Image 1: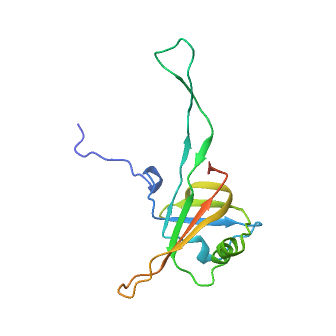
Image 2: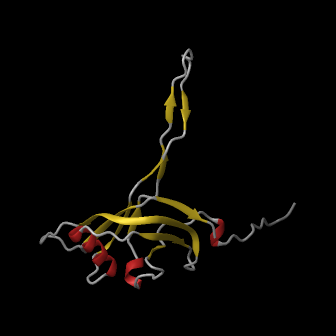
Image 3: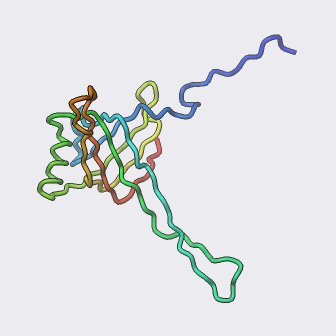
Length: 160
């Protein structure tokens, strides 16, 4: 029997990835926006649901048939400290004030400790549907947080 038990060394990629290191790239006309517009504090809405359609067969009272129907997607919500002069902010302003939309593809990259991508998702034909800023409060000493919400046609995970 060995005196010492040795465990194999595992790299960072052997563990489930952490969720705090990510980037968001807006791919408009093949141009990636400036460094400010890829960094966000929080991202939510990575979800897809299939609502089953039910069919009741005549004479069958024990169960109903359930068939997959369309896929629905949640909106992609991005949060960050408010940035003055952001190109992305200008696009949101154009959409909200002039009702002009320029859909673009958005790639979300989950990164490891070495800033290498471990997972990527592509959101197709994304466009702004909501913009909000945190409450302005003279009694608070907090950073102004802006929230940007995007609708999109579909998303898919990209293999590395």
